[in-house]
Image (cartoon, rainbow, N blue to C red; front, side):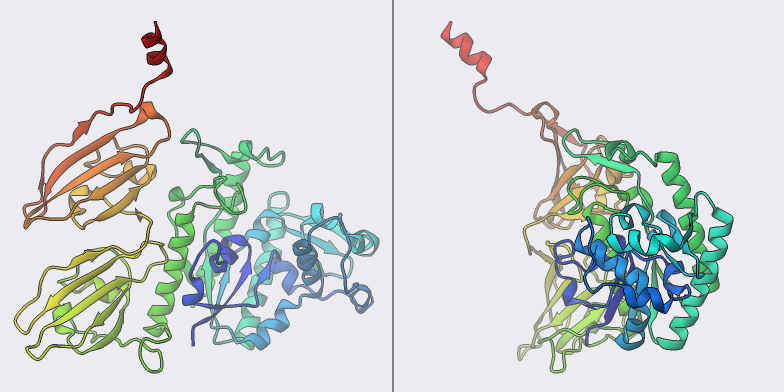
Amino acid sequence: MLPKMTSFGACVSRDLFKSSIVRDYKDFFDFSNDQYHMSVVSLMSQPLSEDILTQIPEIIEGDVNNFVKKCFKEDLTKSFLEKIKTFNQDYMLLDFYMDTYYGVIELDNGSYISGKEWQYKKIEFYNEVIAQHVQQVITPLQHKEKYMSLWKKSIDEFMLFMKTYSKDTKIILNTKKFTNKFYNEKNEVFEDLSVVIKDAKRDASTIAELNLIWDEMNEYLLTNYANVEQLVFDEDKYYSSDSNEWGAFYLHFNKEFYEEAQQQLINIVLSDRGYFKLEQVLPGGICKKIDDNANSFDEIREWGYYYLPTNQYLKLKDKPNNESAGYFLQNHAETASGFFIQELTRASLKTTIQSYKRIVTKTGYSEWNSVDIGDEVIYLSKVGDLKDMSHRGEYYITDKVARTIVDHPTQKSGWFLNVSKKTKDSCVQELIKKTTIDANMQRFYRILNFKEKTVTSWMEQSYMKVGVSKEDKDKKKK
């Protein structure tokens, strides 16, 4: 069975299990039973009085969408606790968006609901019933000491609840915080997100302050509960833009974030279980594990399908690259003389999957050969020196990554990188700038000798505009 996943938090976690954002998550996770937009304080607070609970209408009326109505009803009933008891999830992905961004509304019986007052005031039942019991709104920005004390008590109660009723569930903390960086795709520049979305309540300093509070919450959980796993991110790599399915917001990121987060989840599961259950791989659907003492692919000769977690892959001396990732390995059946094919495919959620093949004999093996799969470039997240990029393929380097590459000709802007097929010792590297403006077009190329780790200088190719301009046409008429 695939690992059973649930999430408790916001879109920064829930969107990892949405097919329009992470296309093939269902190949890796059985996801259900999520709780959206609810504070930990609300969930663990004293239940509402029986009198109020019995008045909650089956259909919530108000000038909000069905999603908000659903969240409001669950906020009142705390029904997620009962779901946890019965769902038997293997993993829960947790984030503290609601606790950081909204705080809570305190009611007169000692209960709390999440602090989305601006939306709840558009709901009839809130105005007619709940509002009559409101004592105060408590937020981490305005009442930090009081709120953090309340939050720490609540998260401790939640962890005790999980230990009591769902002790086999591993909690994974999503540590990703807010970004105030917006990428203007038309002008190819970064801008202040709070200004772009015209946020009247928050500016760059407010977002920075909220992130410090979020850091404090993350640190408290990780320090006090050693069994909690975490997703860790380079905050500078991710930004918001209009290309996100939900539009620009402090927790709506570029697609590289979702790919990275999903890969980290996969690695956690593989570290725990050593495999994913994949249908039609072997009878029973289980990939084989390689011997922990194996030092090379040459030692893995038995027919079948294997999965290699990142730590095992990286220690094999005859691997095709040094990227930190898990890989599927297929050993094809041998010929009578002992020849067989080894096929290696990266466990990736990218549209373009990296795959390699080679021939293995009783006495040796060929070089790994790259195989094209898919129709998108491979995004490079970490590359210090382009001399290391000798595997044929089409790649994309973001502006952020370009600034860290020591032998990049400009060290700025986004670039397409094409690496050609090889001779015995050399290949061609080509860089083309990503732009929509004719005057900004740039192309560089050079020869890489990957055997000796030497390169020629980058040569820039000038561009000549194809076609006749209006000005040229007018001159010709004269």
